[in-house]
Length: 244
Length: 268
Image: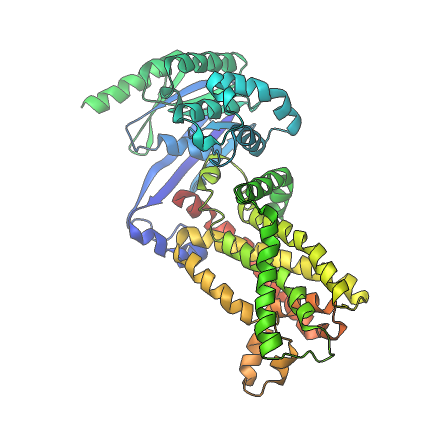
């Protein structure tokens, strides 16, 4: 389902990064390898088969989110390749790209369409999406999203992405937000989606979320894959590093 | 290059959605809404007519109407102006969308060009009305010149917007620089004065004239004028410059965008 080979991405630090235009245009990103740069991920190989639920742990700033963004295709690797069999439903950011001046209804249609839902699919799923987001959102679905509370935005964002028919689901720390009632709904949805055979990659710091959903665990450390095994293996290794 | 064209074409629904959103956002908070896209160029036309038509008494060679001359180019200019200025922020202003949804990134600048094109279309009825009022001459040039000019301008703007949107992410100064430079471009093309004035000018040295004529926009605006002033039909040399220049800018834009894309995504 997801095949990653020799994946690496390089970031630049400091002000120099803006002055590299000529370099970028004429030398690609391969020249001048070491000055002020670092590799949040390098030499990563990973195979995820259909229906697997994979949890990713690691300290802050060690490339977990970068890995998800690379899989989602919103970052491009400097080395290696990523191959996906099927489309991705990415839950990378809470607001899911909503425009704050548009109404909830317009935003659902906008974000749904941008993620590849047809008009027909949108029309069919619209009520379901709004209902899932809760009463509060339903009452203000025709108000601009800028009047929504952050909780309402998150709920609507999650509802849209959860309704996407895409086989691969990428989730980055999103379930931590929202009240207990909504979290329970999220858990139900996740379980439901997994039961349908979707593939999940979940980045989280929440141990119970990870052990609840994930059958396989990855621990990313120092820009590479430190552990690729069961979720408890990964969590154990992670805790050792954090507590050391 | 063919690959990115295909990717954009496959995402034409996305383009439609983006343009729709763009227009909704732009006009929903204003009472006059769409009318603004007409008021702005028309008020500019009145100002230029007042200065150059009334005060400086500009005459066209074939005795055509000077107000019509301005109007025949001003809507196209408004499209140029707004598309170029807005394309600089096409990626930075929508970074949320760009970094959460996997789309061919080219759709963001191209969407800006399309959105401003929709406003240009809104001005076409006014253009036709003016042509009727000021006795614009309808010839075969009307039916060839106008579509050809629109097509060339479209491709030129796509090239420019791809170039500017990606470079702005790496170098934010570009936005301010472009604002200034676009003003220069306005006076550096035969929009409010006839091209003959440039040919006839004795003050301009030869190299400056050659530089002036190398601008593909000169040929494009001559096409716009020639739709109602057959006399203004561009020479073969001018037409060739317009076509070759447009394609060169388009190719450059596509290439630069592709080269910068990985770095742009990291930066947003």
